[in-house]
Image (spheres, rainbow, N blue to C red):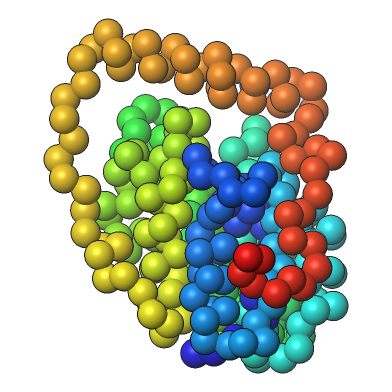
Length: 259
């Protein structure tokens, strides 16, 4: 399948937050997918409107109208993924988020674009009450994704079909975002869905993890708490977001790759 334009809407996952930065921007799964799309179409352009920390209403109000301006028809692929940050907040209302999600997907489909959606990984390999809440909330969200995806004929990329993705070694040090290997595998999963060249090794699980000494594991957890968890808690208390004041990395169609 050849696309002339790829437009990305969403939060940190779609922005591509990871441990790999090139020319001041994170290099995530969408950038890697754009690399292959560009090889298939000399007129290919790329738009990435995603910004970390955004809630679904912010994505819908700030990014989607811009994305729709650049849709040229079925040869435009629009990736829409939002709602995960809402599910992590206290007072999450699944019915409100899911209905807004579905209405937005319908609006994107009505533009004539090809639509691509994502589920959220329900089982993270973690234990405890927090993980149970996570699984319940994202199970409801994923049901909504699959339902509206089937309704509009969207491409749905479902991470839950591949159990090995729950391996925490695909996560960056913040334990929330994918690392470079995680984004690489996600990109190849998307490319396979799109019928574009991909590396089939993306399905190969990592070798068994070596046992980490207790003292090192505890030290890493302490470092993680002060570097990532505590700032996240403080932002929630202050009503702030990691995306405040940030702009999209590619807000208008650019020829790709940039160099």
